[in-house]
Amino acid sequence: MKNSFLTHVPPMGIYETLYAFQNAFGTYMGEKGTHPWSQGFPLTTQIPGGPKMPENIKIDSDDLKYPKAWGQPELRKTIAEYYNHHYGSSIDLENVMIFAGGRPGLIALLMFLEKDIQVRIASTEYTPYYDMLRLMNREYELIDSTIENKFNPTIDQYIGNNSNIRKLILLSNPCNPTGITRHGNELKELVEKASFSENGLLVDEAYELFHTPPC
Image: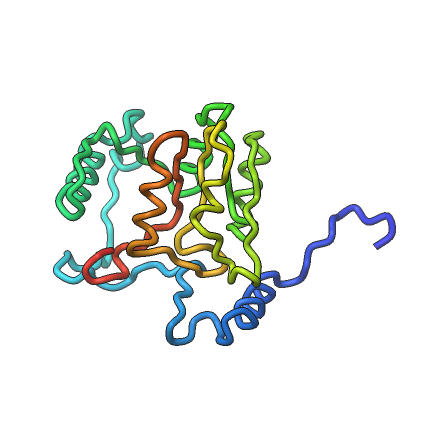
């Protein structure tokens, strides 16, 4: 539009993603064999063997106070013990940080990231990630994610060939909006290759409790 004050935005962009998914995989996202978790899928039923879902929550004056600056040590300790029990890890509360949601946590991590670290991110990732990178003035490199590779870049593509720079891989798993999910040996390989030397890994979305047992 001539002399428009607004940049062009495609209408209902989510449908573009859904049609692209169908063209690439031959089925709609959400049908049997696909996992549309990336579109938001809060657990609203009781976890097997867990406590009943609360029907109401009592709030008193203590609950309305500002949170503690140290992130609630008791909660951090409980989270650490959960992972140590179920996954054989050896972390303590000093390895756990608490944030008011995923986005504040991601922004804080990007804010405190060392300036020389390059972020590597797929071109079809959750679009607010790019806003965060731009606002935090972070250097990043896009990894090709297209119909040709079924929106699933290889681990080696994420790692890249340049060993002279420190890199942080940023991804959502399941990916929002493509639904691609790395699991099992592939996820293990990604973690191993991105957890040592000059590489790091920042994973958003982790719906472990959608599986029995968790994975």
